[in-house]
Amino acid sequence: MTLQLESRFHSFSFRFISRYKPSPLCLCGDIMAGSSAQSSTAERIGYISRIESFSACHRLHSIHLSDEENKKVYGKCNNPNGHGHNYKVEVTVRGKIDAKTGMVMNLTDLKKCIEEVIMIPLDHKNLDKDVPYFTTVVSTTENVAVYIWDNMVKVLPPGLLYEIKIHETDKNVVVYRGE
Image (cartoon, rainbow, N blue to C red; front, side, top):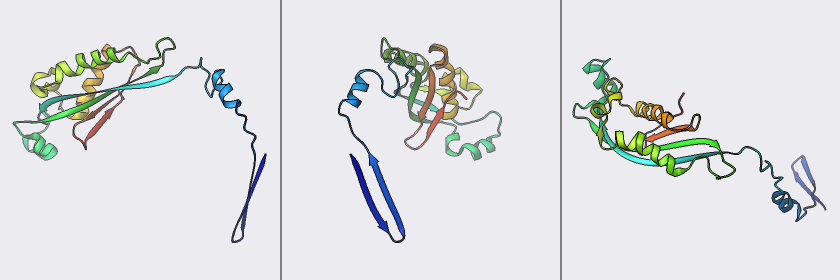
């Protein structure tokens, strides 16, 4: 079957010619035979994310800056009484989709890792006083993401962790990929 279309615009002339004979069995047969764009035995990579929320308070204050510099750099977030957030954290793993289980990782296992690394040590805590890591590190959301990354890689299989994404507010989001 040949389809010809002609169209003229001012001095331009376009001609489209297509020779296409669809076979109703062609696509279906290829897919059923496993000869799609990627063979069924080819390595498939998947991404799995789990989102959890935790509440914590902190004060942005660097021991390397004077009180005046801290106020200038961190503004109202340097309040001596601190302030809090309802953080939303998204942990993403990346890996081969197992041919037997059909999973990159069992979500139940990922949930347990998140509970151990994020929820127990951080939820309803004062980050600066209750989490030893933040006694010498400013508890910015960037550093919270680094803290979570560094501890998640300890409990996950090597090379599986892909990304930590933290929503400090609806408008402020930090992404960390271990770089």
